[in-house]
Amino acid sequence: MTQLLVLDVVGLTPRLLEHMPRLRALASRGFQAQLGTVLPAVTCSAQSTFLTGDLPSGHGIVGNGWYFRELGEVFLWRQHNALVGGEKIWDAARKVTPGYTVANVCWWYAMGAQVDWTITPRPIYRADGRKEPDCYTYPPELHDELPTFPLFTYWGPGAGMPSSQWIVNASLHLLDTRRPDLTLVYIPHLDYDLQRYGPSSPQAAAAAAALDEVLAPLLDRTDVTVVALSEYGITDVSKPVDINRMLRAEGLLEVYTQDGMEYLDPWVSRAFAVSDHQVAHVYVRDPADVAAVTKLCEALPGVAEVLDETGKTEYGLNHDRAGELVLVADPDAWFTYYYWLDDARAPDFARSVEIHRKPGYDPAELLFDPADPAAAKRRAITAVARKKLGLRYVMSPVGLDAGARAIRGSHGRLPDDAADAPVLLCSDPSAVRMRIEATEVKALLLGLAGLS
Image 1 (cartoon, rainbow, N blue to C red):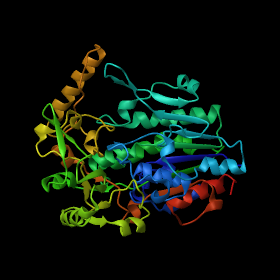
Image 2: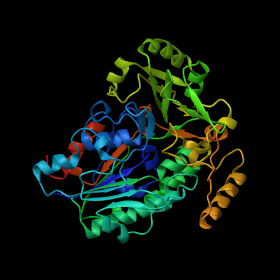
Image 3: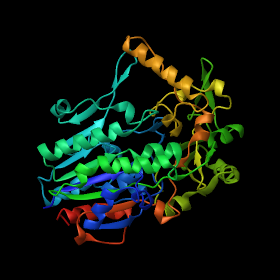
Protein backbone atom coordinates (compact mmCIF):
# COMPACT_ATOMS: atom_id res chain seq x y z
CA MET A 1 0.00 0.00 0.00
CA THR A 2 1.35 3.42 -1.01
CA GLN A 3 1.05 6.53 1.15
CA LEU A 4 -0.59 9.47 -0.66
CA LEU A 5 -0.24 13.21 -0.19
CA VAL A 6 -2.97 15.12 -2.05
CA LEU A 7 -2.48 18.88 -2.36
CA ASP A 8 -5.53 20.91 -3.37
CA VAL A 9 -3.75 23.96 -4.80
CA VAL A 10 -6.69 26.30 -5.30
CA GLY A 11 -6.78 28.05 -8.67
CA LEU A 12 -3.83 26.15 -10.17
CA THR A 13 -3.91 26.11 -13.98
CA PRO A 14 -1.49 25.30 -16.81
CA ARG A 15 -1.10 29.04 -17.34
CA LEU A 16 0.08 29.56 -13.74
CA LEU A 17 2.40 26.55 -13.88
CA GLU A 18 4.66 28.65 -16.10
CA HIS A 19 5.67 30.47 -12.89
CA MET A 20 5.98 27.34 -10.70
CA PRO A 21 9.11 25.30 -11.53
CA ARG A 22 8.84 22.99 -8.50
CA LEU A 23 5.33 21.91 -9.43
CA ARG A 24 6.45 21.42 -13.03
CA ALA A 25 9.27 19.22 -11.72
CA LEU A 26 6.67 17.08 -9.93
CA ALA A 27 4.92 16.54 -13.25
CA SER A 28 8.20 15.77 -15.02
CA ARG A 29 8.82 12.94 -12.52
CA GLY A 30 5.33 11.60 -13.10
CA PHE A 31 2.69 13.19 -15.33
CA GLN A 32 0.38 16.14 -15.86
CA ALA A 33 -3.25 15.79 -16.93
CA GLN A 34 -6.16 18.03 -17.72
CA LEU A 35 -8.68 17.85 -14.90
CA GLY A 36 -12.38 18.15 -15.56
CA THR A 37 -14.42 20.06 -13.02
CA VAL A 38 -18.09 20.36 -12.09
CA LEU A 39 -20.72 23.05 -12.31
CA PRO A 40 -20.50 25.10 -10.20
CA ALA A 41 -16.70 25.11 -10.28
CA VAL A 42 -16.37 26.16 -6.65
CA THR A 43 -14.58 24.69 -3.64
CA CYS A 44 -17.30 22.76 -1.83
CA SER A 45 -18.83 21.20 -4.94
CA ALA A 46 -15.50 20.24 -6.52
CA GLN A 47 -13.96 18.80 -3.36
CA SER A 48 -17.09 16.74 -2.67
CA THR A 49 -16.92 15.30 -6.18
CA PHE A 50 -13.21 14.46 -5.81
CA LEU A 51 -13.87 12.57 -2.57
CA THR A 52 -17.08 10.75 -3.55
CA GLY A 53 -16.88 10.33 -7.32
CA ASP A 54 -20.40 11.76 -7.59
CA LEU A 55 -21.72 14.89 -9.28
CA PRO A 56 -23.60 17.47 -7.16
CA SER A 57 -26.84 15.68 -8.09
CA GLY A 58 -25.50 12.73 -6.10
CA HIS A 59 -23.57 14.21 -3.17
CA GLY A 60 -25.86 17.23 -2.79
CA ILE A 61 -23.25 19.98 -2.53
CA VAL A 62 -24.72 22.33 -5.11
CA GLY A 63 -22.38 25.21 -4.21
CA ASN A 64 -20.52 26.76 -1.32
CA GLY A 65 -23.96 27.37 0.14
CA TRP A 66 -27.64 27.21 -0.66
CA TYR A 67 -31.11 28.01 0.65
CA PHE A 68 -31.98 25.54 3.42
CA ARG A 69 -35.67 25.26 2.61
CA GLU A 70 -36.45 23.38 5.80
CA LEU A 71 -35.03 26.26 7.88
CA GLY A 72 -35.98 29.20 5.69
CA GLU A 73 -32.37 30.45 5.81
CA VAL A 74 -29.45 30.91 3.44
CA PHE A 75 -26.21 29.41 4.76
CA LEU A 76 -22.79 29.37 3.14
CA TRP A 77 -19.68 27.56 4.32
CA ARG A 78 -21.33 25.02 6.61
CA GLN A 79 -18.75 22.63 7.99
CA HIS A 80 -20.28 19.28 8.88
CA ASN A 81 -19.42 16.31 6.71
CA ALA A 82 -22.90 14.80 7.12
CA LEU A 83 -24.12 17.33 4.53
CA VAL A 84 -22.13 15.43 1.88
CA GLY A 85 -23.88 12.41 0.43
CA GLY A 86 -22.25 9.46 -1.28
CA GLU A 87 -19.45 7.12 -0.31
CA LYS A 88 -16.33 9.02 0.76
CA ILE A 89 -12.89 7.86 -0.31
CA TRP A 90 -11.93 6.76 3.22
CA ASP A 91 -15.00 4.52 3.43
CA ALA A 92 -14.11 2.90 0.12
CA ALA A 93 -10.49 2.44 1.22
CA ARG A 94 -11.49 0.80 4.50
CA LYS A 95 -13.57 -1.78 2.66
CA VAL A 96 -10.25 -3.05 1.29
CA THR A 97 -7.99 -2.19 4.24
CA PRO A 98 -9.96 -1.70 7.49
CA GLY A 99 -7.13 0.14 9.24
CA TYR A 100 -6.62 2.73 6.48
CA THR A 101 -5.75 6.09 8.05
CA VAL A 102 -6.62 9.55 6.73
CA ALA A 103 -5.64 13.09 7.70
CA ASN A 104 -7.66 16.13 6.59
CA VAL A 105 -5.84 19.44 6.72
CA CYS A 106 -8.31 22.21 5.85
CA TRP A 107 -10.32 20.47 3.12
CA TRP A 108 -13.94 21.55 3.50
CA TYR A 109 -16.66 19.64 5.38
CA ALA A 110 -14.04 18.49 7.84
CA MET A 111 -16.21 18.51 10.95
CA GLY A 112 -17.52 15.06 11.79
CA ALA A 113 -15.72 13.36 8.90
CA GLN A 114 -14.72 9.80 9.71
CA VAL A 115 -11.00 10.45 9.41
CA ASP A 116 -8.20 9.86 11.89
CA TRP A 117 -6.78 13.39 12.10
CA THR A 118 -8.48 16.70 11.37
CA ILE A 119 -7.10 20.22 11.30
CA THR A 120 -9.44 22.98 10.16
CA PRO A 121 -9.83 26.73 10.85
CA ARG A 122 -12.39 27.46 13.59
CA PRO A 123 -12.41 30.88 15.29
CA ILE A 124 -13.23 31.41 18.93
CA TYR A 125 -16.53 33.30 19.12
CA ARG A 126 -16.50 34.80 22.59
CA ALA A 127 -19.63 35.76 24.50
CA ASP A 128 -18.80 39.47 24.26
CA GLY A 129 -18.78 39.33 20.45
CA ARG A 130 -15.02 39.06 19.88
CA LYS A 131 -13.74 36.71 17.19
CA GLU A 132 -10.26 35.33 17.77
CA PRO A 133 -8.03 33.09 15.63
CA ASP A 134 -7.94 29.37 16.34
CA CYS A 135 -8.42 25.99 14.75
CA TYR A 136 -10.28 22.77 15.47
CA THR A 137 -8.40 19.51 15.67
CA TYR A 138 -9.22 15.89 16.11
CA PRO A 139 -7.98 14.30 18.26
CA PRO A 140 -8.17 17.30 20.62
CA GLU A 141 -4.60 16.90 21.89
CA LEU A 142 -3.31 17.70 18.39
CA HIS A 143 -4.40 21.31 18.95
CA ASP A 144 -1.62 22.06 21.41
CA GLU A 145 1.04 20.68 19.07
CA LEU A 146 0.37 23.52 16.61
CA PRO A 147 0.89 27.29 16.79
CA THR A 148 -2.14 29.59 16.63
CA PHE A 149 -3.79 29.52 13.23
CA PRO A 150 -3.39 32.91 11.46
CA LEU A 151 -7.09 33.29 10.72
CA PHE A 152 -6.96 36.85 9.41
CA THR A 153 -4.50 35.84 6.68
CA TYR A 154 -6.82 32.98 5.62
CA TRP A 155 -9.57 35.30 4.41
CA GLY A 156 -10.30 39.03 4.34
CA PRO A 157 -8.27 42.07 3.27
CA GLY A 158 -5.21 40.64 5.01
CA ALA A 159 -5.41 37.22 3.32
CA GLY A 160 -1.99 36.08 2.19
CA MET A 161 0.85 33.61 2.49
CA PRO A 162 1.02 33.12 6.30
CA SER A 163 -2.09 30.92 6.29
CA SER A 164 -0.79 28.68 3.49
CA GLN A 165 2.62 28.48 5.18
CA TRP A 166 0.91 27.44 8.44
CA ILE A 167 -1.05 24.74 6.60
CA VAL A 168 2.11 23.41 4.95
CA ASN A 169 3.87 23.27 8.34
CA ALA A 170 0.90 21.53 9.98
CA SER A 171 0.85 18.97 7.18
CA LEU A 172 4.57 18.29 7.58
CA HIS A 173 3.99 17.78 11.30
CA LEU A 174 1.32 15.15 10.63
CA LEU A 175 3.39 13.42 7.96
CA ASP A 176 6.38 13.18 10.30
CA THR A 177 4.59 12.25 13.53
CA ARG A 178 1.49 10.27 12.43
CA ARG A 179 2.32 9.06 8.91
CA PRO A 180 -1.25 8.83 7.54
CA ASP A 181 -1.95 6.57 4.60
CA LEU A 182 -3.78 9.47 2.91
CA THR A 183 -3.15 13.13 3.71
CA LEU A 184 -5.47 15.75 2.20
CA VAL A 185 -4.09 19.31 2.25
CA TYR A 186 -5.90 22.48 1.13
CA ILE A 187 -3.64 25.32 -0.03
CA PRO A 188 -5.59 28.60 -0.50
CA HIS A 189 -2.99 31.18 -1.49
CA LEU A 190 -3.78 31.51 -5.21
CA ASP A 191 -7.38 32.41 -4.37
CA TYR A 192 -6.41 35.84 -3.11
CA ASP A 193 -4.49 37.99 -5.59
CA LEU A 194 -6.09 36.24 -8.54
CA GLN A 195 -9.49 37.52 -7.41
CA ARG A 196 -8.14 40.90 -6.30
CA TYR A 197 -6.12 41.66 -9.44
CA GLY A 198 -7.02 38.99 -12.00
CA PRO A 199 -4.99 36.00 -13.21
CA SER A 200 -3.36 38.07 -15.97
CA SER A 201 -1.82 40.49 -13.45
CA PRO A 202 1.80 40.67 -12.29
CA GLN A 203 0.50 40.04 -8.76
CA ALA A 204 -0.93 36.68 -9.84
CA ALA A 205 2.39 35.58 -11.33
CA ALA A 206 4.20 36.66 -8.17
CA ALA A 207 1.73 34.77 -5.97
CA ALA A 208 2.24 31.61 -8.02
CA ALA A 209 6.03 31.84 -7.80
CA ALA A 210 5.96 32.51 -4.06
CA LEU A 211 3.62 29.58 -3.39
CA ASP A 212 5.80 27.27 -5.44
CA GLU A 213 8.65 27.91 -3.00
CA VAL A 214 6.46 27.40 0.07
CA LEU A 215 5.24 24.05 -1.28
CA ALA A 216 8.79 22.73 -1.78
CA PRO A 217 9.02 20.69 1.48
CA LEU A 218 5.85 18.81 0.51
CA LEU A 219 6.68 18.41 -3.16
CA ASP A 220 10.16 17.09 -2.42
CA ARG A 221 9.07 14.24 -0.16
CA THR A 222 10.11 10.85 -1.46
CA ASP A 223 8.27 8.75 1.15
CA VAL A 224 4.83 9.45 -0.36
CA THR A 225 3.20 9.65 -3.77
CA VAL A 226 2.31 13.30 -4.31
CA VAL A 227 -0.78 14.43 -6.20
CA ALA A 228 -1.43 18.15 -6.76
CA LEU A 229 -4.77 19.20 -8.21
CA SER A 230 -7.06 22.19 -8.42
CA GLU A 231 -10.81 22.69 -8.12
CA TYR A 232 -11.12 25.42 -10.74
CA GLY A 233 -9.24 28.07 -12.66
CA ILE A 234 -9.77 31.76 -12.01
CA THR A 235 -10.33 33.96 -15.07
CA ASP A 236 -10.38 37.70 -15.64
CA VAL A 237 -13.67 39.51 -14.96
CA SER A 238 -14.78 43.14 -14.98
CA LYS A 239 -18.56 43.12 -14.59
CA PRO A 240 -20.56 42.47 -11.37
CA VAL A 241 -24.16 41.42 -11.99
CA ASP A 242 -26.77 42.45 -9.39
CA ILE A 243 -29.24 39.62 -9.80
CA ASN A 244 -31.06 40.22 -6.49
CA ARG A 245 -31.48 43.93 -7.15
CA MET A 246 -33.20 43.07 -10.42
CA LEU A 247 -35.52 40.61 -8.68
CA ARG A 248 -36.32 43.21 -6.04
CA ALA A 249 -37.04 45.89 -8.63
CA GLU A 250 -39.48 43.46 -10.24
CA GLY A 251 -41.31 43.02 -6.93
CA LEU A 252 -40.19 39.41 -6.43
CA LEU A 253 -37.62 39.79 -3.64
CA GLU A 254 -38.72 40.98 -0.20
CA VAL A 255 -36.76 42.54 2.66
CA TYR A 256 -37.52 43.43 6.24
CA THR A 257 -36.08 46.40 8.12
CA GLN A 258 -34.48 46.69 11.56
CA ASP A 259 -32.80 49.85 12.84
CA GLY A 260 -32.82 51.29 9.33
CA MET A 261 -31.03 48.27 7.86
CA GLU A 262 -32.55 45.93 5.27
CA TYR A 263 -32.32 42.16 5.49
CA LEU A 264 -33.24 39.59 2.87
CA ASP A 265 -36.53 37.90 3.72
CA PRO A 266 -36.42 34.53 1.93
CA TRP A 267 -39.49 33.27 3.79
CA VAL A 268 -41.84 35.50 1.80
CA SER A 269 -39.84 36.35 -1.33
CA ARG A 270 -41.35 35.02 -4.53
CA ALA A 271 -37.84 34.77 -5.99
CA PHE A 272 -34.29 35.48 -4.79
CA ALA A 273 -30.79 34.34 -5.68
CA VAL A 274 -27.97 32.79 -3.70
CA SER A 275 -24.98 34.14 -5.60
CA ASP A 276 -21.80 32.08 -5.67
CA HIS A 277 -19.08 33.57 -7.86
CA GLN A 278 -20.18 33.00 -11.50
CA VAL A 279 -23.17 30.82 -10.62
CA ALA A 280 -26.39 31.80 -8.87
CA HIS A 281 -29.19 29.58 -7.59
CA VAL A 282 -32.54 31.32 -8.05
CA TYR A 283 -35.20 30.02 -5.68
CA VAL A 284 -38.75 30.55 -6.94
CA ARG A 285 -41.48 29.94 -4.36
CA ASP A 286 -44.41 29.40 -6.73
CA PRO A 287 -43.94 27.12 -9.75
CA ALA A 288 -46.32 29.39 -11.65
CA ASP A 289 -43.65 32.14 -11.48
CA VAL A 290 -40.79 30.11 -12.95
CA ALA A 291 -41.45 31.00 -16.58
CA ALA A 292 -41.65 34.73 -15.85
CA VAL A 293 -38.53 34.67 -13.68
CA THR A 294 -36.70 32.77 -16.42
CA LYS A 295 -37.46 35.52 -18.94
CA LEU A 296 -36.29 38.22 -16.52
CA CYS A 297 -33.02 36.40 -15.86
CA GLU A 298 -32.38 35.72 -19.54
CA ALA A 299 -32.74 39.43 -20.26
CA LEU A 300 -30.32 40.53 -17.52
CA PRO A 301 -26.97 41.68 -18.98
CA GLY A 302 -24.15 39.42 -17.79
CA VAL A 303 -26.22 36.21 -17.71
CA ALA A 304 -24.99 33.60 -20.19
CA GLU A 305 -27.27 30.67 -19.32
CA VAL A 306 -30.45 30.03 -17.37
CA LEU A 307 -30.71 26.36 -16.45
CA ASP A 308 -34.14 24.88 -15.82
CA GLU A 309 -34.75 21.28 -14.75
CA THR A 310 -33.49 19.98 -18.09
CA GLY A 311 -30.37 22.15 -17.94
CA LYS A 312 -29.62 21.22 -14.35
CA THR A 313 -29.92 17.53 -15.23
CA GLU A 314 -27.52 17.99 -18.15
CA TYR A 315 -24.85 19.39 -15.81
CA GLY A 316 -25.46 16.98 -12.93
CA LEU A 317 -26.93 19.71 -10.75
CA ASN A 318 -30.48 18.40 -10.38
CA HIS A 319 -30.79 18.18 -6.60
CA ASP A 320 -33.46 19.41 -4.18
CA ARG A 321 -30.97 21.89 -2.71
CA ALA A 322 -30.48 23.63 -6.06
CA GLY A 323 -32.57 26.61 -7.07
CA GLU A 324 -35.51 26.20 -9.40
CA LEU A 325 -33.23 28.01 -11.84
CA VAL A 326 -29.44 28.12 -11.97
CA LEU A 327 -27.76 31.07 -13.66
CA VAL A 328 -24.30 30.99 -15.25
CA ALA A 329 -22.54 34.32 -15.81
CA ASP A 330 -20.85 35.58 -18.94
CA PRO A 331 -17.09 34.89 -19.04
CA ASP A 332 -16.22 38.40 -17.83
CA ALA A 333 -19.04 38.66 -15.25
CA TRP A 334 -19.87 37.42 -11.76
CA PHE A 335 -22.91 37.65 -9.44
CA THR A 336 -23.15 39.89 -6.38
CA TYR A 337 -25.42 38.99 -3.47
CA TYR A 338 -26.52 42.63 -2.99
CA TYR A 339 -30.28 43.08 -2.55
CA TRP A 340 -30.57 46.65 -1.15
CA LEU A 341 -31.13 49.57 -3.50
CA ASP A 342 -29.48 52.22 -1.31
CA ASP A 343 -26.10 51.62 0.37
CA ALA A 344 -27.33 53.61 3.37
CA ARG A 345 -29.82 50.76 3.97
CA ALA A 346 -27.25 47.96 3.76
CA PRO A 347 -26.95 45.77 6.87
CA ASP A 348 -23.90 46.41 9.02
CA PHE A 349 -22.42 43.01 8.15
CA ALA A 350 -22.20 44.05 4.49
CA ARG A 351 -19.09 46.12 5.30
CA SER A 352 -17.52 43.36 7.39
CA VAL A 353 -15.85 40.04 6.73
CA GLU A 354 -18.91 37.92 7.55
CA ILE A 355 -18.91 34.79 5.44
CA HIS A 356 -21.58 33.12 7.57
CA ARG A 357 -24.08 36.01 7.68
CA LYS A 358 -24.12 37.17 4.08
CA PRO A 359 -26.71 35.38 1.90
CA GLY A 360 -24.19 34.95 -0.90
CA TYR A 361 -20.50 35.08 -1.67
CA ASP A 362 -18.70 38.44 -1.36
CA PRO A 363 -15.22 38.68 -2.94
CA ALA A 364 -15.05 42.35 -1.92
CA GLU A 365 -14.06 41.00 1.50
CA LEU A 366 -10.58 40.52 0.04
CA LEU A 367 -10.13 44.29 -0.38
CA PHE A 368 -9.93 47.31 1.84
CA ASP A 369 -12.76 49.51 0.58
CA PRO A 370 -11.48 50.81 -2.79
CA ALA A 371 -13.55 53.96 -2.35
CA ASP A 372 -11.14 55.00 0.44
CA PRO A 373 -8.58 52.30 1.34
CA ALA A 374 -6.75 54.51 3.83
CA ALA A 375 -9.94 55.21 5.79
CA ALA A 376 -10.86 51.50 5.72
CA LYS A 377 -7.44 50.59 7.15
CA ARG A 378 -7.80 53.25 9.87
CA ARG A 379 -11.18 51.79 10.83
CA ALA A 380 -9.62 48.34 11.01
CA ILE A 381 -6.71 49.55 13.17
CA THR A 382 -9.13 51.31 15.52
CA ALA A 383 -11.26 48.17 15.79
CA VAL A 384 -8.21 46.05 16.63
CA ALA A 385 -7.19 48.56 19.32
CA ARG A 386 -10.69 48.38 20.87
CA LYS A 387 -10.53 44.60 20.76
CA LYS A 388 -7.20 44.55 22.60
CA LEU A 389 -8.68 46.84 25.26
CA GLY A 390 -11.56 44.42 25.75
CA LEU A 391 -14.10 46.84 24.25
CA ARG A 392 -16.80 46.07 21.73
CA TYR A 393 -15.80 46.78 18.17
CA VAL A 394 -17.02 46.54 14.58
CA MET A 395 -14.54 45.61 11.88
CA SER A 396 -15.85 47.31 8.72
CA PRO A 397 -13.10 47.48 6.08
CA VAL A 398 -15.15 46.13 3.16
CA GLY A 399 -16.52 48.25 0.36
CA LEU A 400 -19.89 47.83 -1.33
CA ASP A 401 -20.36 48.82 -4.97
CA ALA A 402 -16.80 50.11 -5.24
CA GLY A 403 -15.52 46.80 -3.88
CA ALA A 404 -17.58 44.82 -6.36
CA ARG A 405 -16.35 46.89 -9.30
CA ALA A 406 -12.73 46.41 -8.18
CA ILE A 407 -12.79 42.59 -8.34
CA ARG A 408 -10.78 41.31 -11.31
CA GLY A 409 -10.95 37.50 -11.06
CA SER A 410 -13.70 34.93 -10.57
CA HIS A 411 -14.67 31.32 -11.25
CA GLY A 412 -17.64 28.98 -11.25
CA ARG A 413 -18.27 28.57 -14.99
CA LEU A 414 -16.93 25.58 -16.81
CA PRO A 415 -13.63 26.63 -18.43
CA ASP A 416 -13.55 27.98 -21.97
CA ASP A 417 -9.77 27.55 -22.42
CA ALA A 418 -7.69 24.56 -21.31
CA ALA A 419 -4.95 26.94 -20.16
CA ASP A 420 -7.37 28.30 -17.53
CA ALA A 421 -8.81 24.94 -16.52
CA PRO A 422 -7.94 22.83 -13.47
CA VAL A 423 -4.95 20.53 -13.68
CA LEU A 424 -3.72 17.37 -11.95
CA LEU A 425 -0.05 16.55 -11.38
CA CYS A 426 1.23 13.26 -10.00
CA SER A 427 4.67 12.00 -9.03
CA ASP A 428 3.87 8.41 -10.08
CA PRO A 429 4.26 7.91 -13.87
CA SER A 430 2.58 4.51 -13.79
CA ALA A 431 -0.88 6.10 -13.72
CA VAL A 432 -0.24 8.48 -16.62
CA ARG A 433 -3.19 9.78 -18.60
CA MET A 434 -3.98 12.91 -20.59
CA ARG A 435 -7.28 13.85 -18.95
CA ILE A 436 -9.11 12.97 -15.75
CA GLU A 437 -12.67 13.92 -14.90
CA ALA A 438 -13.47 15.21 -11.43
CA THR A 439 -15.65 12.14 -10.90
CA GLU A 440 -12.62 9.92 -11.59
CA VAL A 441 -10.29 11.43 -8.98
CA LYS A 442 -11.50 9.16 -6.18
CA ALA A 443 -10.80 6.04 -8.24
CA LEU A 444 -7.43 7.40 -9.34
CA LEU A 445 -6.36 7.99 -5.74
CA LEU A 446 -7.52 4.54 -4.66
CA GLY A 447 -5.54 3.06 -7.53
CA LEU A 448 -2.40 5.01 -6.64
CA ALA A 449 -2.75 3.76 -3.07
CA GLY A 450 -2.95 0.16 -4.28
CA LEU A 451 -6.58 -0.17 -3.21
CA SER A 452 -8.39 -0.54 -6.56
